[in-house]
Amino acid sequence: MKTNECNIVQDLLPSYAEKLTSEDTNEYISKHLSECPTCSKIYEDLCNSTSSISDDKKFINYSKKFKFRFSILKWIIIILILIFLVTIIRKIVIIEDLNSKALEFANSSNYYSLYHQYNDDSLTIVESYNLDNKYYRTLKSVDKISGEITENIEEKYNGQTVETTIFDKSGNVLKSYTTTNINGIIPIEPKSYYLTFSTFAERLKTYIFCDIQETTFNGVECYRFTDLYNSQLGYNDYVYINKETGLPMRDCENSNDKYNSIREFYFEFNTVDEKTLEELFNK
Ligand SMILES: [Zn+2]
Image: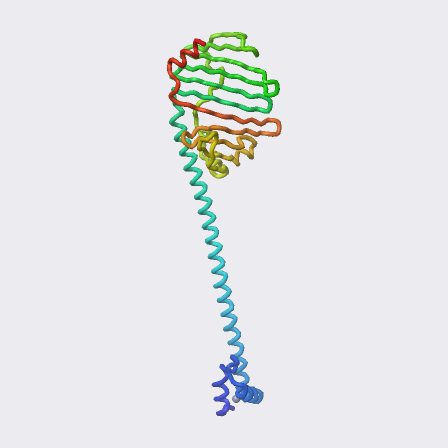
C-alpha cells in the first residue's frame, strides 16, 4: 500500500531521522508511521544505518587520535635516542681527544713529575726528574698523625746503574747500594688515564657509563670524570684530566670504608737539563 502520503513521508524521513524537521511535520510523520508499516520499516532501517554511520565516524575519530598520540610517542622516542647518541658521541670525542693529547707526552724524554698520594693515615710523595735515559727520583712517606717520615728513598740512575740511598727518620743515610735494577721507585709517567681500557668493549662501557663535566682544578681547566661503571666496582670514583695535556691531575679511589685514597699528579715538560740532573746527582 503505497500512497501519495507515503511518498511525502519517505522524502522527509532522512531529515526526520536527524531531527531536522519542524514540530508540525514531526507530528504528521509520527502519526503516519504508526499507521503505515511500510514507511515504519523504512524509518527503522534508516535509523539503524544512521547509527552505524555515526559509529564509523567515532571509530575514525578514535583512530585519528590514536595515530596522533602514537606519532607523539614516536617522536619522543626518536628524540630520546638522539639525545643518548649525542651524549655518547660527545664522550667519545672528549676521551679520544684526551687520549691522543696524552699520547704526545707518553714518550717524552724530558719531564718532571710530582705525585702525592693521600691515604687514611699517610701521605706519600714521589718526585721525579727525567732526562733521556737518566733520572733522579725520591719517595717520601709521612705519617699523618705523628708527622714523622716513615720512608725516605732516593734513586739516581745514570743510564747504566741505579744508586739507591735509604734515609732514616732524621735524614741520615741508613744504607746505600748500586744495582742495575731500575724497578725501585715506581715511576710516575705522563700517560693517558683511559688508555688502560684497551678493548673496545671496555671503552664502550666507559663511554656509556661515565659522566663528564667541565671544571677547574688548581686553576687549570680540566674535565671531571665520574666513572659510574668503575665506581660500581668500587674504585676510581672520579678523576680530573687536564684539558690541554690529556694527563690526569687528581683521582680518588674508594674501594670501601677502610681504604680511601686521593692521588694528585703534576707534570712539567722540557724543564730538566743536564745541569739540573748533575746538581741532583752530586747532592
Ligand atoms: Zn506510508
